[in-house]
Image 1 (spheres, chains in turn yellow, orange, red):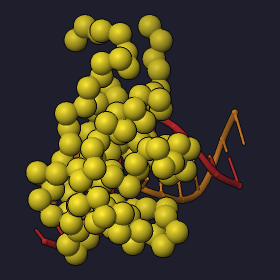
Image 2: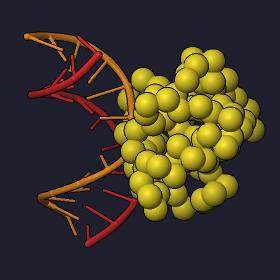
Image 3: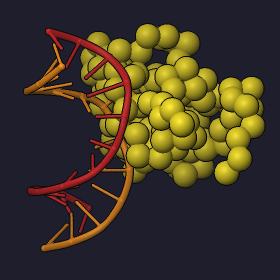
Length: 117
DNA sequence: AATATGGCACAAA
DNA sequence: CTTTGTGCCATAT
């Protein structure tokens, strides 16, 4: 059985499923991609966001509801601004109503063949 | 090829 | 609540 690393394509696909005004966490994406402990790796891919801005990396935050980092021009500030524009309120570095805005309804359909648990 | 770093998560103190 | 330490994986140099 070939042990594949985290599927970049899959991660991007999942992330693109996140609607505006909602946010996802690195953990969520990693988990949805089939790598529950590769949250950091997800960040590693987006660090240089190869598919920007098709891939809304700014919409991904910490599992705690905080923004995390951002390699943007003005650093974290840009991320906040963009999110605010999307409708996500950020208060003191924390996302307001994070639980409500959290998107975890990722669908693996069309991204992979049916797999047996 | 190897080292360092990073946009993380989680447990423990 | 905050701080510290450990695990995990992709990217950059």
